[in-house]
Image (cartoon, rainbow, N blue to C red; front, side, top):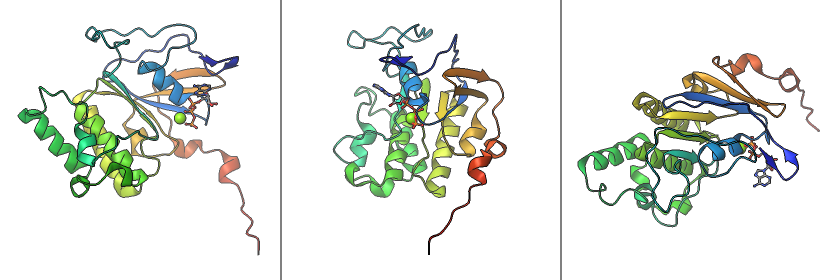
Length: 229
Ligand SMILES: Nc1ncnc2c1ncn2[C@@H]1O[C@H](COP(=O)(O)OP(=O)(O)OP(=O)(O)O)[C@@H](O)[C@H]1O
Ligand SMILES: [Mg+2]
């Protein structure tokens, strides 16, 4: 993948099987979000191709069969003008919206993300952490086959992190494949069973997820801050 003459990363072959839960690591600007967008069908790689198997044929208006099946959750989620409830239900299939199963899933999402007191609030008034909780609840309701979570717990306090972790764990149990990027050591990385690392413009893959606690850069850990008086 490259933007103009700038090469971002290359990979000989990457394989994402339904139900895989993969931790994606890389420095700022290494291309994590770009890779997720490629896998979600939102960007085309400059060379090579994405081959997907097992998804049904796309509708005539969808250019890419991955759209809607492999969902990319932006690190700064886009919300629609309107209430929290409107955002939760927007885009759900009209045919199914009144079915009992979908109503139950909607209620469960509202409870798990603790959004019940915010349902009638305007989404534009939500805090950063609340916005992320809402966006994850929306994805949770849709139950995509693959979900790319881009820094899903940045901006979140411990309480929100716990709520989101429970939702993501539930998706994992239900068989949703997950690709998760995070700069933080957290319960999220503990959920992962594989590791993709973008380093020196190459995507390295491994079956072993490193413990980030022991991987901290000493130059950061050993920094001394001088307080001016
Ligand atoms: N559409 C684009 N056109 C040109 N350059 C782009 C485009 N999208 C991203 N880039 C550049 O590609 C590089 C990788 O961006 P990307 O957002 O994928 O990094 P990242 O690993 O997700 O970083 P971070 O950890 O900060 O989120 C960045 O330098 C970015 O400026
Ligand atoms: Mg990013």
